[in-house]
Length: 289
Image 1 (tube, rainbow, N blue to C red):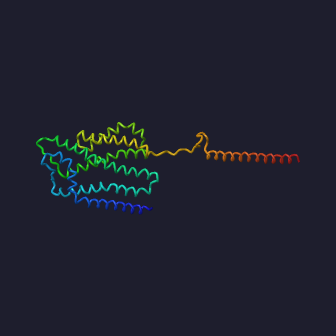
Image 2 (image 1 turned 90 degrees about the vertical axis):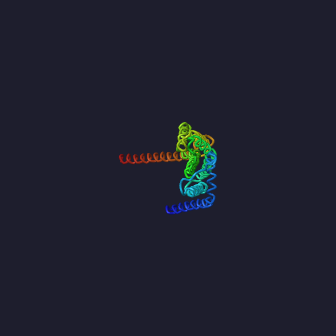
Image 3 (image 1 turned 135 degrees about the horizontal axis):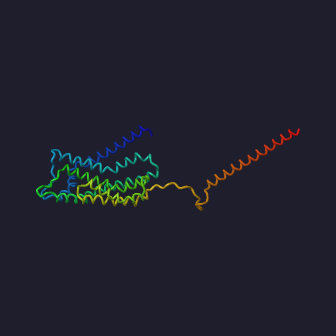
């Protein structure tokens, strides 16, 4: 395919992806308020009785559910988006590479969704329970509808990406960027990095930091367990099946050809010596005459 044909195919893939997102968005938007109520359940459960989320902006009650429906449409369309990416790059891959990439795409999608669900059902109740209990008693804890959505999307996306640690580990080993032994040797740095990343991605409390750091560490260990299944094997030299010390057929054939050439060279030397002796004999006859 020419460069222009690749661009046309890329345009088609992007167009199909946008259409899929729009179709899901159209299906979700009529129920956006109900979906937002479901998302707000973790924080509503810790608010004082009779307290609700507020809207500071004039058009926030409309724009916030709209934004939520669009982002949810992207999340739900993720398998189809990955399929479009896969169908675009698959022709450039070898057969064994295609066989390895397909399970990685499926597992990465499942892990991304698992990270989002983990944040919603495990992390958010702990975080909101902590935040609602540490404020001064004279301050009413009434989050804004837009700020709450931004916070939930940020943290849930961070957990979705954090759950991709096994895929990143497998890819590093599969493409020979590092080795399993090297990763095991640097395990303490990985654990420290997980806690630092947890500190950056979550609110400033030790509970939420631990809730993201420990799963990342465990998922890193899972990546080390499954990485040997995807490790590329280096090509081996051809050897005889019966005796490893016995030369292969190709080497024996090369040795035979080399011996034949040596015999030809020896025969040529003997013939040349015979001719030289014959010439010397002729010169001796001429000298006697």
